[in-house]
Length: 203
Length: 201
Image (cartoon, rainbow over all chains, first blue to last red; front, side, top):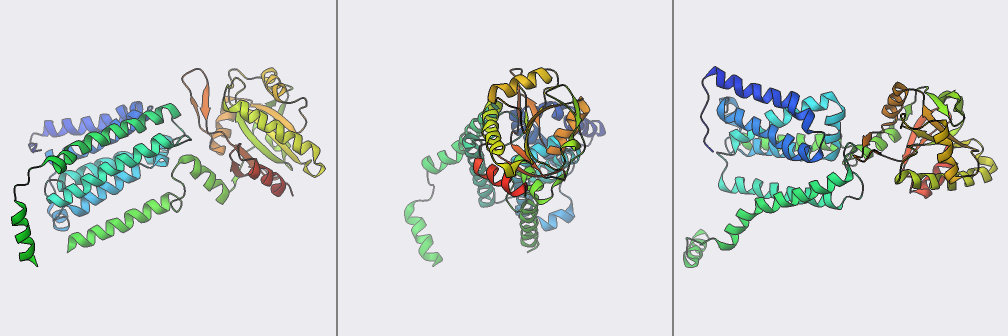
């Protein structure tokens, strides 16, 4: 996705203000519901980070030197994604102000922003490795949320938790449709004979 | 090369932080974290002002010297609290019969200040037992007292959307000097029995 780099200070200010309003006013309201917390609040913060990275702050040279393949920073984003999928920290971010700030900061600047710098330049294999891992995590989360006998978050109701599990499942299926279709139905451009030759050649 | 270094560094610090923050990969939910923290570091509880089933005001510190099994309830509760109630009456039978369990007491604290009063507490208790011996019913005197109590115990009460409440229900064990030392599932009668005998010595 190619987005224009903003040069107009009003546009830059607008995007940052939107982020600030989202972080201070919209999120406290949204996180009253577990569904909104998981499927709007968290992806929203990542999206703002992504937009900031593409439209305001391209990757600085210092970081570029350490992130040529894109792998390190996609890994950073993945670790934070895993962190915020742990039920305990969702509870903490509701009950403790410091944890709330950490959520805003980490998902915007340590998840969304690095992703915008790295996803574009990641190789085909890197990109799809993380994509499959992401899909697998969605399946794992749906499994956890659907099968849990007790409430995972003490601030939310059990019924909502089951719905979150189902939504995770639907999302996981949607995300895997395209890769699965390609694996099953893709027309291989290279004939099998040629692949074989390449294999012998490589030996 | 730098990419590899940074990748390994992030992987190591990331996994180490998650390991440390989840109490060695043990507590992934707030409830297990709470229980883990209490067992590691018992909580010194404040002195709360409570109203008992006879509408008399008492201080929580008046119960010092006893091992207490505290649960949180609201008397209109249609689900868990009813099971908790019958589990408590079984426990009550047990501690009344055993002469060496005289310093063990059951405590039910209501968090429904708008509805529960001395009469409601008495009615609740009479649904499960004939006698109030070694089973105290309380409602905190004020909203502040309730808030302090819930936060020290780590209990979160939320609205269930049908006019009732949902909360992390469990049995909280306090020792003779008023420290919260352990949290046990009310279904886990084996551990409850063990706790009664071990902490009351």
